[in-house]
Image 1: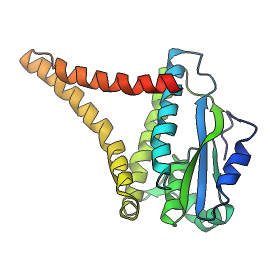
Image 2: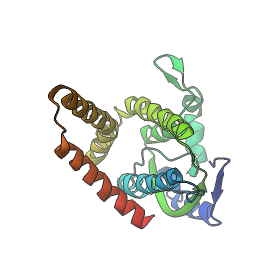
Image 3: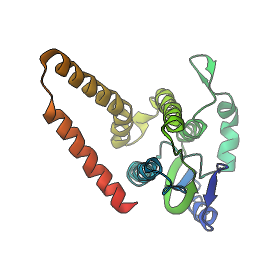
Length: 220
């Protein structure tokens, strides 16, 4: 599976196919980089975000054979496994309504529920075009967030069968943004009501962000 705006390195198919020799693996994804990373400040940040998503999140999940989303721009699926899941994949519903977004995460969860492993191959590099302005980026992120929350419900019954780390990871993915938003709202309320600036909370969040992004900037 390759997006139309993605360019694969010459050896990507070979490296993904080598990983798929294990019959227990239903899907594998490569590492994503931003092909237009040098265009704007936003594309540079997204390139760092992709590095974190691939080489922290997916790499950690792959230690347990359960990458929770084999990303659409560069993924390989076992044909026999896909044939078993095709009816479920083609008829995505959420709360009784058809759902046509986040198909990569949805298919990955279906693979895991069927008992297959999903993997990450860091040296299979795919360069994809990323949004260079905030409007398209925010729309993309909203679509991805909807997919993450929706498929978390699909994965809840699956989590007890997987390593405890993956439960922590999935819960953190869903609660983290909500807790960050709650922290920001609480800080604004404190400022409005008490007139004091919660500088310690802001400093803690800023330091954590800087440490994480510095690692990504250095490695990416």
